[in-house]
Image (cartoon, rainbow, N blue to C red):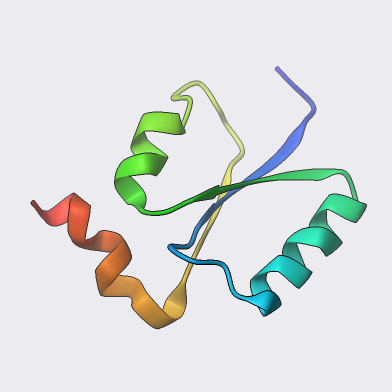
Length: 70
């Protein structure tokens, strides 16, 4: 198992505030993968990963989940 810390961040368009948080995470050696929606998450997520954090864009929850409901 890999010891790399990785966060999948689902966010259509990262704001300045989001980028600030991402840079803080990177400072602590946490890799952040920004994905536009949950469909992209499904394409990029390795099923064998055991510990994963997914952060969503709270302001546009419906827009991010739309590809999953089609």
